[in-house]
Image (cartoon, rainbow, N blue to C red):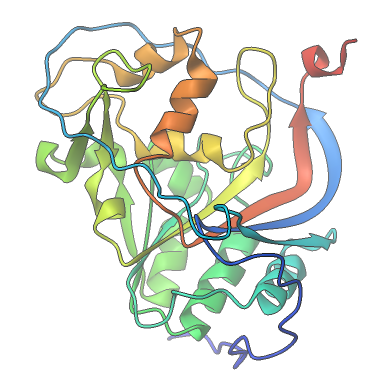
Amino acid sequence: MQPNHSTRKYKRRRVLRLAALAAGTSILPAACRTVNSTSPTPDASVDATVPTTTPTPIAQSPSGNVSKVVLVRTDDRVAGTQKALDLLQPEGLSDRTIFLKPNYNTGDPAPAATDTQLLEALVQELQNAGSQGITIGDRSGMANTRQAMEQKQVFQLADRYGLETIVFDEMDADQWQYISAEGTHWQKGFAFARPILDSGAIVNTCCLKTHRFGGHFTLSLKNSVGMVAKYVPGDSFNYMQDLHSSPHQRLMIAEINQAYKPALILLDGVDAFLTLLSLKA
């Protein structure tokens, strides 16, 4: 049975009009606590030649490509999600199919992976906003993706709310879009999940944590790595080995984000990963 949803329609408190909505919307429910983080193990390298297309960078908006940001201080992820969306009044979600990209690098508690209660609250808010179907998908870097999604109860959530789910590792070759290496630091470009590009709107919900090479924070940028293939069926090249072995990893992460334009970003900063390296003088 479909659960009862609230009737909130994003009509209250149109505040924090910081700028025109451009490359996407950032929402950061924060009150950070710190816990230890771990680093993934690089993969083995394989060579291949693949067909490519050239990415289209996001164009500058008249406002200078400035995004609208709402910051909510809370320890309650569900209440923080609802409050942030209520303040933000996000546009471009009604009457569209939505691809919801969480973070399932593992199936562990947040900030290692997306909190399940937060994800459910976000799904409720998107459905209340009039979305026309939601798909949830990811590719794990450290764990088996399907097992991580099962551990986080994604498939049960999908059954309750009538959602579609995709495990990127299980997709056929024609479900990947090759992005050209031209103008990037990727040796052979990269393969991007086509279901994301084909959706009406993209919602990125991510965790606040570091990544390799110095413990730098990239906010929502790192979550886009899960949109890229490690392997494409019939293609032996290891795209994640290319990323993890490169001294240009941070630039390559940024280059992934040129391939798509999010409609909404929800960053969970209630807990954060820090490394000792990032605390040294």
